[in-house]
Image (cartoon, rainbow, N blue to C red; front, side, top):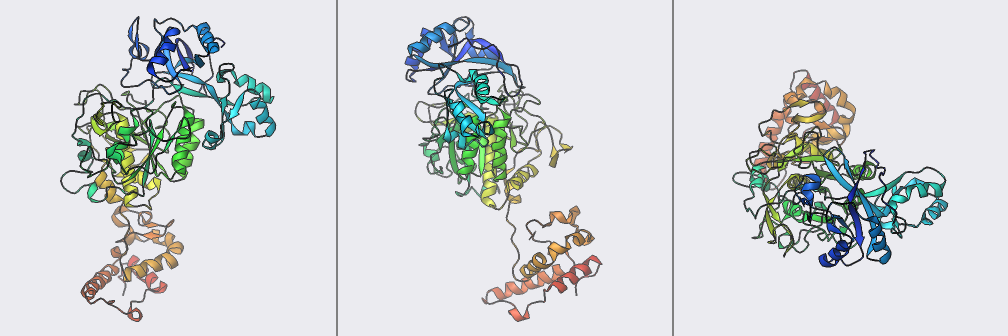
Amino acid sequence: MPSFPDNLAHPSGVHLELNPDRVLLAPRSTPVAGARGDVLASLGLVPEGAQRTDDGPVADAASGREADKQPVNAGQDFVFARTADGSAVDTDALDAATSGGSVAWSSPVYTADFGAGAEELSPAADAVVLLDADVASPEDLAAVEALGLQRDEVRSSLLGELDYFTVVDPAATPAYDLPEQINAALGREVEVRLEWVPLRVPVAHTPNDPMYVDQWGLRQIGAGGPGTTGWDLTMGSASVTVAILDEGVELGHPDLAGAFLHNGINLGTMSGTGAPTGNHGTPCAGIVAARTGNGIGVAGLAGGCRLLPIAFDRWTDTEVAAGLRYARLQGAQVVSMSFGWNAWSHAVIDPAIQEAHNAGMIMCVATHNQNTLNGITYPATNPLVIAVGASDQADNRKSPSSPDGEGWGSNYGPQMSVVAPGVRIPSTDRLGSNGYTGTAYTGTFNGTSAATPHVAALAALIRSRNSSLSNVAVRNIIEKTAAKVGTVAYANVSGHPNGTWNNQMGYGRIDVHAALLAARKVVKRRYFENDVVKHLRDNILEKRVKEIHEIDDVKIAGREIDDIFDPGELVVNPGVLEEVDGIKEVIKRLDRIEERMGSIGSPFVNAEDRPDVSTEVVEAAVAGSANGNGPS
């Protein structure tokens, strides 16, 4: 094993500084804590997050973040570690351990600032990503494979224009040493992308206290509680699936029984199930779709909808992209993503976001919890996703000064869409001794991680109420109906077309009841109005939209005709015809006749006696109204 390079290229261009006392490695022993600890101890290492002998908790000394707020990233086949005394990692000892068989591979750790404070990351030694065009020919593929690389067909199929290669013997030739060799083998310069592994899981949560059973957020956003609420309109449909792209979900949780579309997938093995690889995904899933009315636990906001669990392994950009494509291929309509990391490659993830958007999926992403202006983390900065911040119990942006007394704050800035409750949220937890509490429920799931599934659940409720709405229409409804709460001032701002906006709260705090009212389906009147609508749609609308724009009488309540007629779908909203003088009175009279005749069980007017609604008659009626004369 050669010495670790002092510098490596990151695709963003951000400077990477070698962190000499840290290492990412893959012990060959079983992932039992004791056995893994023996391997680390023999190298003078301790697991990241463990107490260090010289200066206290590793997380505090290294990054200033509390360990329980940003858990260390660890998997079945890899572990981040650092020296017990703060000295440099002994690469010679690592080389000997690799040769002796106790370590499969190791990789350096680098520190960099991607705009939200210092981050630690490491290139995976056993994987490398190439642009698809670079290995298009059989000759190129053979040249790359001769270097000890093997194409992973399953991952490549979920990465769009990218091909994913694994390193057959990373101990001999780690991935970070391969870019120059690949260029030499192909005889030209190509773009080689390493797979970067975050030292800390990039989720946006803050679990802390014992269970707090009051689900205050559901009442505050108008889902449940006294009076007419969103749940009076819908509690979710089983035809709508929300993908939980996270650390997996407790598949056997009693409060999630019957919620799963199926058992999902593990993005590390690209097989198996979406069972937990960590604690974070299960409470996110419970906020969305814990079963409602089953007499146990908590109520999910969209408790009638389905869940698709997708479990991260290493939290790499390739896993984000593969997870999004998997969710799309499985038919998920909404994706909840309670995470963010600026070191991920946009070139890897953005195409998957674009494809998901094109397919009609609604993507809800956390802004993160550093209480930072202009600190919203990627991919919440992508304009195709809904960037979700956290609100507190006083309906303000969650900040260290919020009345709950917790010292974190929701990131904010120009990409803000909406906020949702994100502090002391009760939800499902992993079973047994796992999870945050060991009691199957947590009462204090916090952060923009808790806010994000609220918005994902609202999107699922909107789709449940009106399945014909596009993802753009769903987002518009969420933003336009958001409550203008908090102490901040909202104003019309360029680039934010869905109403008044503020960089701390976006368009405001989500309002479930208002959103579901706005999502109601258009129901046409029977008989006479249906006939008129049919003639307008089939014979007039396409030809006469330009003329109709100029009719003052159909500019209702300050709205132009575009808000009434949708020429793309040729749908007429109810009530439009009523606003044209004369037609309104005719409809009222016909409705009264229909009401009286309804009990007899026969039509109130025979087909041959129905009013003349030919094209000429309707055109004359509309033209007469435009001239100030009601139709005769």
